[in-house]
Image (cartoon, rainbow, N blue to C red):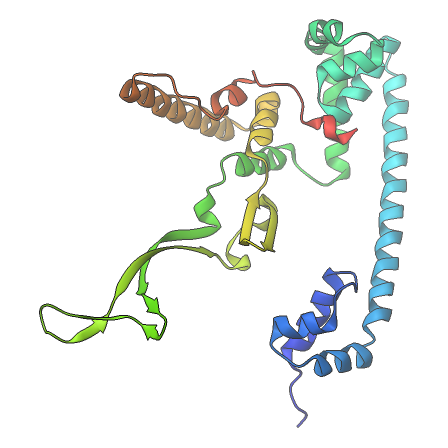
Length: 302
């Protein structure tokens, strides 16, 4: 019976692939606590570079095909909008731009080639047009269908980001540990028994939960820097702003959940103001849900 394949062999290649082959083999060996020679042998026998180049080429081809498909789909959408007899040419342009950025001011400014203040005054007003609203909804649904997503699923994902709890990803608190001196653990006399016992101290601890236990789609970044490991969640405020602009996509249950959180936040804010006898600055939470925050983080898409 043949010897079982070392699981580190696959792990080593995954590390190599994550860095696009631009990592020293000794570093991989150090991470896996194995010899550099073993890693070099695996790289040669398993043809890592050939695999990496093949994966890269396939990825490029998939990306190119996807862009072509998206371009053709967008062209079909534009063609359908231009055939809509209930809209003027400017209205059609507005619908196309809005479906891409979900920002009425920006869409109006592009369609009408006007200044920001004019667009801000008339963009929202144009959104109230029945014909314009219907066309935008059709474009949104077309886009969702292409991506095989339900708009309620998208709304839920933004809710998950906005209301993510850091304790879903890390555990933190205090623990006791031995005080270490120059010659090892410091010993002190136990007043109750007269015996020597290790001196204890309380320390702050933070532990990441295993990747299989968390929703990785809510994490923007995990890194291990010179100051230690850190985790960064997706932008909560941007998600709140998006939710405020797209409440029409929510189910009744989702709307109720948002309203409940708004009420809880308002109660906490009121209590804080009463206790401190001063108005404390919140993090923009209520304003975001009311839709009064600065418009459009979707500007980044352009």
